[in-house]
Image (tube, rainbow, N blue to C red; front, side, top):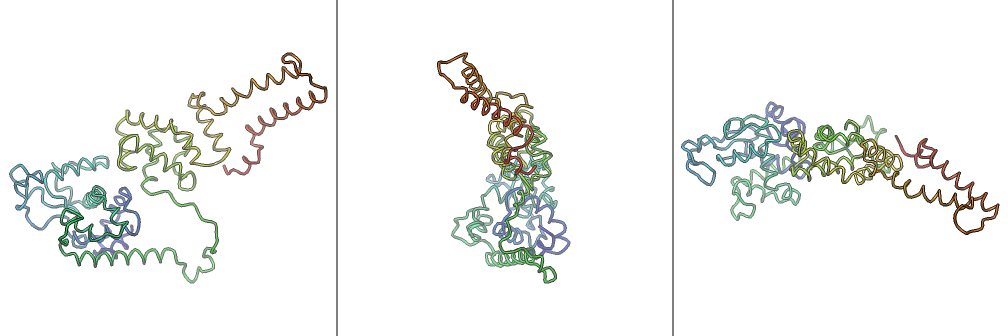
Length: 383
């Protein structure tokens, strides 16, 4: 999200766009507000709620919230102290406390003790994205139910029969945001006349899709907490060009193991809690084969996975170890039978010579192919 897009979509000033764009970009990535439909709905609603990003503090003095136990305002002065703040205004002591808990993985301050922090651009943006995520509004945006989103925000229920306040303004802002996003997409993908000769051919091979931004941002920290993943992804900096499915699967496994709501939160949990990092590492270990298969790389990928298991001291998890354990005795038995030490079969000299030659070729060829990369599949696999 660029300042120019934010200004076009919300009608804010250039100065406000510069102030809020980086924080909204990070927050939207973290909460999956990452499609044109979701972004248009989100930007339209926060533009209405904040008066085109002008207001992050409710204009009313908040006295009407005094004594509202449903908002957690149980102490004298809570009404004005915890009046609406943020781009989607959080209101009431209980909501400030819950918001601080949900944003704790992102190093948020204690909003209950420091409510004014929600007026800062960073937390005004993140609190709005968090509220959006906590109420499942991405699903409504995906279905185009924009009116229901406004009623969820303003009336407290998406099923409300009453229109949201200034519903017509919200709809007008939605159209503006959709137009801004459509224009950006057109400018991004349409080649200029000077470069028409460089435009992609109609049937050009599809390029690798980039790694999702919030996964890419969290992956290096996850790799640092679970070093074994470094054997699959390296430092994490090259994952955008390869092993994308494996990277996303790894983050999903870690999220499930930690119970985190998103990739960034999972990374923060691993950093703060060694026990949770160990638990996530065990989950990765249990699904290691699935990870290596998701990453592709054919024989080379299998070889790397096998080497990683052996390097970690888990020889009994090595596929080549078990294959060798099963096949080597068979080789010994065949050899002993050929030389007449076991069995009752009578082998002619021609059969003995043929079987011995095939056996030697298979053993030597397999070793050379595995360790020196002479197989056709290995030669076709990019390093």
